[in-house]
Length: 399
Image 1 (tube, rainbow, N blue to C red):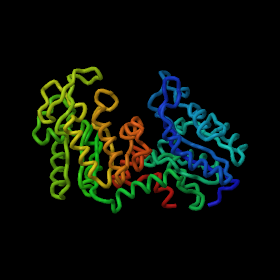
Image 2 (image 1 turned 180 degrees about the horizontal axis):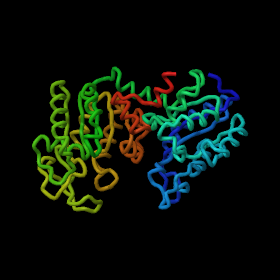
Image 3 (image 1 turned 30 degrees about the horizontal axis):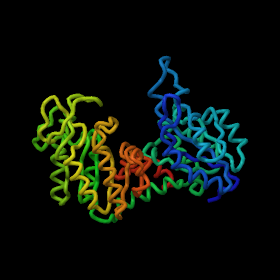
Image 4 (image 1 turned 60 degrees about the vertical axis):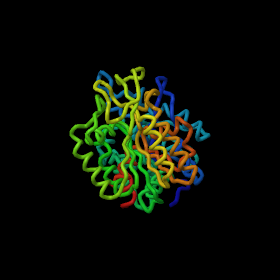
């Protein structure tokens, strides 16, 4: 594919967290896109970057207008310029007059960041007219936004239909994400251990079903564990339980048993009398939690058992925290899992960290370089592992 002297539109995922002063607090996603941007610059392209930031349409101001001060991608320009080592221009709109004028003037070796795609009403609906306007800005389209590959948006999927097969491709990050997910799914080295956490069974239902066909061990932590414990007859106090999923929890365990897959639930839990950081807390057996108390993290016995299983594994998938990770008092279980995954990796295991709080835990502990791969896409990685088609990938692959 020819990139020299071409205007290349690259869709990235710069949906990064900002503090109250609109400073980027975690630049993992920006760093993830740098190799593709640099490669395009090396090849003599004029690079036009497109991304979304937050959910501006869901958080409108009192007068019903978009909060452009809060959600503008202009906040990302200083950090991007710093990491890229060159100034990045900014367009005050996505496909409007400012974007068009700045694209027209853009020279090879220069970089332009367009305004938040979600300021455009047609973005999330996959509007063809908007996608056509986006496509008109460039000669070549590169999709490097794995984090939004599961969305059929104008900038991630519809736009690809306006480029011929030889003028659209995946970026380096997207290629790495697909390769690492496939490494886990196709012929993994055994034993395979999947660690699944988070609040609800319903969010991970398809993933758990798929993992029973793939894994040797499935470790279940987080709020979702208590639905399984209640289904097995345990007393879970005020812990989060999805009553309507109890039958499903039994069904999944029966399927696992039939296939010889070990399912590990936390033997003990750190329980609290309130859902807050400074609540009274103590350790209890997970199936004997008193009324008025709730499980907010795995306990020390569970952490030890889970860590042993992880350290004896050759392939590891981790998706979701073991407790209420955002509260330091209940982050210990998640931290212990992160350390075990890193140790197993150092001893030769392949580990894939699949999004969300698992990534935050690995980064927080400075262990990102001690695991095999940290995915930039929580929801997208989940869908990919479930076997669901991703529109952002299909749009490129199907021509």
